[in-house]
Length: 225
Image 1: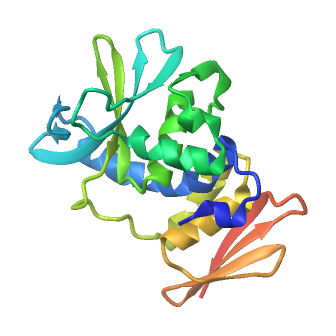
Image 2: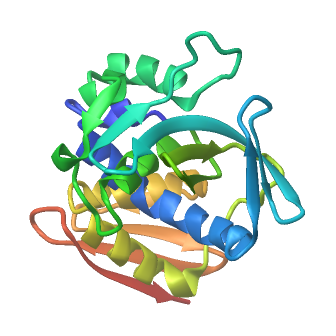
């Protein structure tokens, strides 16, 4: 989904907000797979092994143990493809310096509750259509990985849970609520009607309504037969 079509001046915050519900949903599914399982990483082969499952990954970034700086992964001198290689092109096209600058102070990044590193990982995962991301902690810090494993299922839209998901995502990243809803519905390939103060979509014979206030903040989500 090309967000620049609907954004005159995209920023990192609006990109993260747009993809927040999509990526949080994918992370919840990934977490069920990896939670509590031992893991190992082969960066040369770009394979993350979790329990008995192998997942294709790309390096995104490294954060040292002090947690102060996010350093995007570089493919310089290595045959391995990194997620940042693709993000540089996107960052240049959209004029988002956080995607093109190699080292970023995490104190300058919005913290949605889990830490600013997760904010950058959400942006990368959304823009690159990842199946999730994985923070691989080790002695020297944390290697942040983009999960690209195509065999992983895409999350199905749960009508009963979508209100909680969207309200939670827009609360954590309150920079573009309408865009978050539009992006979420677009990723799930649902057509929607925009009536100004609400967006309506049909899901399996049920009607979802997303209601906004005059400032485009999401105020309510309802589902009806």
